[in-house]
Length: 555
Image (tube, rainbow, N blue to C red; front, side, top):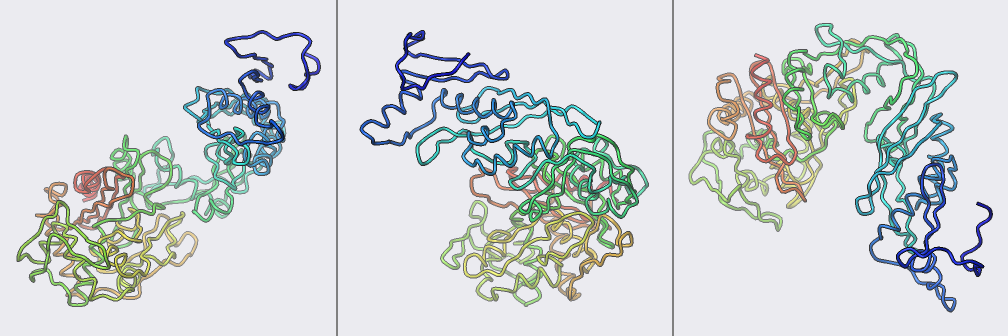
């Protein structure tokens, strides 16, 4: 097409006028690049520099601005011009490094990028490429997206840069790398010797990634060649494992046996199927063996690594503390008013109910918040933290189950936040693994650290708790959970599963959610389980049936 003149130069011929706007279309690698004049970007720039004064364009992005910015970025990226593509983002340094690595470290060639229909400033796009490394090659296709934003200094539309633009599995700081995998593959087996695959158990992808990272180098396998996500510092701190995206050549897997039950695992998968935000864990109280773990949506492993307020399921731990200190007793009268004020906060029961002249057992079974908040003034700020650590083995970040976990958090808090912690709000954070362990501790009488891979495999040391509950406290705690399973908020879900059982429901309010997260933790015989359905509503109605199904099968 020859050299293009600068916009400011006088043209010898007038270009065509379309709808009051003059458009020049430049074809580039299958994507259109639009240069706009007479009311477009160039005209804005010209008026903005009048009399040497530059103004900053503000306001919502127009469809034209979004299209122009996204086309500039995608065209340069597809042409392999990483620096030019990076200049079309709001973080050229980070973008340039990632886009250069896309070709040189990930060894991706023959790249075709196809933009989809923008939704406001968000632009979806598809990627087709070939992974090519030392004579090996495989096609690679996926979808991603980015958002166009205005640069603060001048209002110029640019791509809002994050590593996920390159691939949705990437977090900032992660990289794509193709080569001999640093870790050989593993063949994971269930407790009966059957192979664990994502085809058989769709939600176990993150678990298999974790097993490979932990045991790949020691299980006797040899590495293959693959394109994988290599985690950066932030992702490693979040306990995320490297992830294989394309396998160019298979390595020889080593073998790792787990404690998973094929029957319970299949049931857990079935129970969370179709529920994008449901998670469940089942384990054996007498040993700590994890028998099932499943997550709806098959993405982040909320069951093991989630960090969520557990709501009223936390009252199991709080009750043990109050009974230990003589502040409550199962069959003694205990206050359950409509509201209680502590630390400047006014705490309510669900629908502002009250129980007049009722026992502590009645308050526990109906999940009366004020029955617990009313005792806050008699507790030290660190009492709940010590109880969680010393009796239930939580909040010490020392579990070694065989894959990454979040081991619960019960921070020392004061005033209203300390009171809120008593009912599983405030700063308390748990996941289904943690709460299944709480139920298991009540059932067995002592804490057994959960594990997915037997410690004999790698001679690791399991976490322990420094003390057990007194026989008096333990007996009353079991009575509270048994009564709740028979007559309280857990009765409907636990119907027909008695008499050797116990349960506790929970609902945790989350800012910005119309419905609370529904929790349920329970035991039956030598099986304990816990689940959460995020934004699902009351635990007895949502997580309860999921947990009860596993308890029934495990008998």
